[in-house]
Image (cartoon, rainbow, N blue to C red; front, side, top):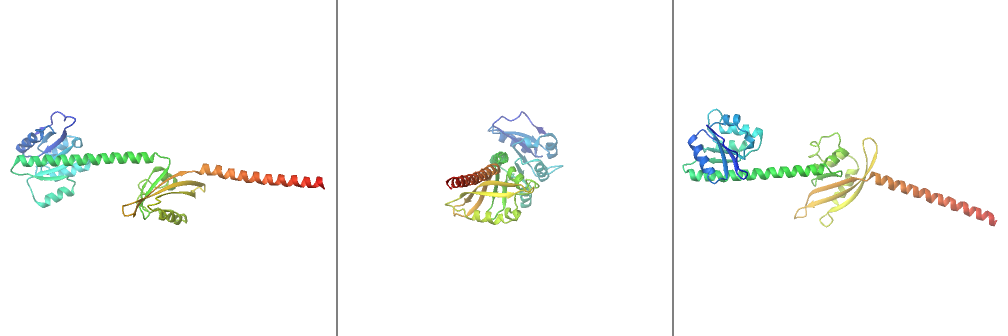
Length: 296
């Protein structure tokens, strides 16, 4: 049996309901679609559903447990191999082992069938709403996080976040390419920044981080370092410490930019000024000598 009618309206939730009890399928579809909140496709076999339906296109899946060919847990495992669509196991078996196995394999909810169809489908509808709402919130968070990471990776500034004990929790691409170009983006988070630096500047940075406090959570530091090619670079870092309500450090956020060109110009100007001053002194000395000779 297969019932996959017209596509759901924009504000409807699309539900795939799979069970070998055809009478229960009919009652469940009728009840859930009564409020026009859900659009329900029904199938009597998990194998049929996997062959004929784009599983991940549904807002949620409701499945029985004991079914011929493939039971509800096996069906759940296959669904989870392809995505996170909400899955509710709806079964007459109430044993604890089935519940634990369902949850351990990624089921969002477990609903036991009962004698009162009105009550059991009202509970099922409630759990579908909860599962769909949670899944959409997770998807939104993932999209926001991806946008945030993309934004940070597009910045030319170097960005790194640390725990209070120096464990890197986030870096952007500019930071990786500057300090650890041979490592992949996923190889650096979870490592200790101070151990990776392994030089005397680590102690300087630790002292600088320890100087931050709730009254002075932000400071700037200038840093000079030599890359693997022996070239000298200058950077300016804005360092922010985040504190909890008990004034305990919870995170450091560091944003750095390269000021090498600015520093080179500054050094060149300083040297030029020194030469000019020296030349002025020499010229003044020569003039005084000539005056002395003339007055001789």
